[in-house]
Amino acid sequence: MSIWKCPGQDRSFWKPEDIFDSPCPHCGHSIEFWKDDIALRCPNCKQLVSNPRFDAGCAAWCSYASKCLGELARTIQSQPRIIRNRLEVALRKKLGPEDHDLLNRSLKAAEKAEEIAVAEKTEPIMPVAASLVGPAARVKGWSREEVINLLEEAGIEGNTAGRIYQLLEPAGDADNPYRNIIDRATT
Picture 1: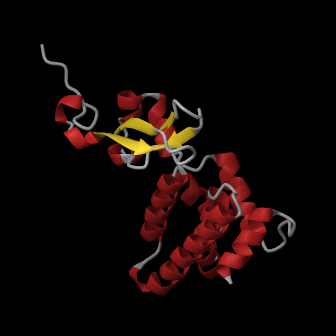
Picture 2: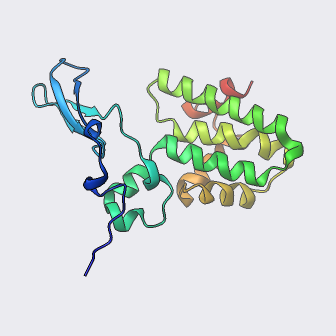
C-alpha cells in the first residue's frame, strides 16, 4: 500500500538548498532554516526571525492545504500578501477588460497604502484592501453586499470585511489611522 504525499511537503523531493543558514537580523547569529519554516527563534538572542526564503507556494491557494499542513495552512493563507494577491485576483475577475485604467489606479493605491502602513508599523491588510477595492467600488457604484462578497471571496472574514467596507464610506471616522493611510494612498 502506497501513501500519497504532497510533493511540496515530501522531503524526498527537496534539494540541498532547501535547508540553509541565515544570519539573525538582531544579533547576527547563524540560524538554520528549512524551506517550510515560517519563522524560528534565534538560539542566541531568542528573537523571532522570519524565514527570508519562505515561499507559501501551493499552500496559499490549494484547497487541500489544511489537510496537508494543518494549522500552518491557515497561518499561510492569512498572511497580508497572500490575502492581497487573492483580493487582486477577485478584483480582476469582477472588473472587465474596459476597466484597465481603473484596475491600475487600484493597484497603485494598494501599493502606496502598503508602503505607508509598513513605514508606520501598522497592520497593512485593512488599508491595503480598502485602497485596492475602494476606487473600483466608487466608480462602479458597488453595493455594500458586492464589496463584502468580493472581500470574502479573497478570504477576508465577515467582521473584518465589514470594517474594511466602513473605511470606504465617505462619512467614516476621520481619526481612524487606517482612514488616514487610505486617504494618502488614494489621492
